[in-house]
Image (cartoon, rainbow, N blue to C red; front, side):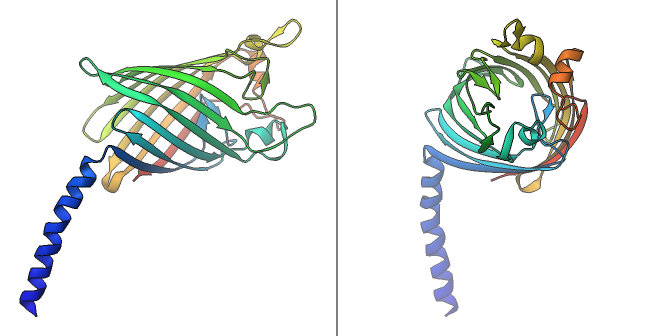
Length: 260
């Protein structure tokens, strides 16, 4: 019986090697991620009124560089601003694109991203659903990404086709586990929300981020970051919710994430 067990184990191990090699050689890859954070910050603005968030998604990638993915998070900003009568507690992102490498340490990434917010808009209101096209260039730990709205109602702002966001980020490795993040962003709105009142004068701003992340065993990552925005009094009023809270106020966020 003992010999039979050993033989069976050896056969199973031998059969497992080709299977593992076959999986490793596959051009397809499916990955996932989940994050718990003290709040959800998007382009310098709190999306959850400084309340905790649970986020996660799945990504499919092909060896050719093609990828597709989806990501979700709870939000509260649409209710906080009185834009939706019900729902408005979820953000669902759907995206796809193509990425690759060239030269020595250079990379590129182009794609489409749909932001979807299920719920009912107030009478006469504007849906916040937004479709953006994006392109990014990277070199080692530096990345420059440009996103531009293809629709005319960017995040609920009417007559805003062509609105763009520039993201400059440095993800600097300090050790093999610790990284330091520096970010600058510029959100530029196009169009007019009313005759003589441009979206730019009301909604454009800049944002900043400083952070640290640390890799833990079993694909966990823990981190913290500080964010802030730069805008004048008119724009601060635009980003102040119905309950009187300015969503672009400087903030400190902590998070724990896992990839699988």
